[in-house]
Figure 1: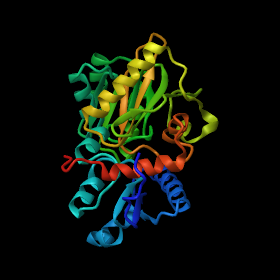
Figure 2: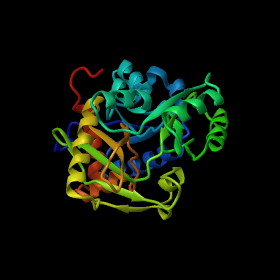
Figure 3: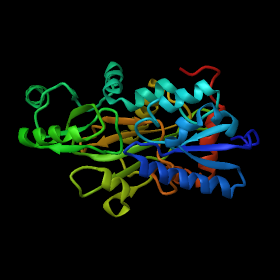
Length: 321
């Protein structure tokens, strides 16, 4: 672990924007700002909504960007690309890994190429009619299914279709959402499990966390209301399942070229099946979020976690795609 002496004086915490995940991003940024300020480090919060006005002036305002931006525009490679062009070091993964992690259909294609288990799915584009989608789902998946944005996160815009009628209703409702592409995925009844990976001279798996809920699935409400979920960390999983999940998480992290920090989500079935749901290259950074909980189980305090995340801005190789 570094002594953090290499940190320049001005840290910009990038957050917010217009993503549906803005509230979670604000919570992450506020917690990070408090932690850095308490450690006598110069930091300021910069809302992504204001970046168009800042332009190249951002380069004269900050020396490093700590990314606390979630969802569209924040973790899909767009902000990362802007920072690359401005020559500002930033935390976490580069443009390509961020885009791959965000776009679930492409991620699933990569997972399938390595025979990594992931729920079967079909992609629904804006031009696909409800009727044609119902036929495709009937032939390839059956029911129940889970509908979710292809490039979203946090289970926003997601729902379960237990019949053709319910699926049709969900597909029609998607027209009111900011996503142009959706996935219809086989519904798997299992316990959500998340695996944090943090760079400590190389990617290291943090203690696993499982999260149970009495809701139909681990939806946005359960993810943001501690009263609607029951967390266990370290997770109480069979040793063989835990080992397989840890190894798979590292494979996924490396597969997309993630750097520094990530969180890979799984479902654990009673029979031991553990399909990968997604990889998050900009995990939530709130003090009581999953990443902080897993770090605490590994003996890493919240302030130290944020410093280690900040370290990742300076440990990239000379070129990251």
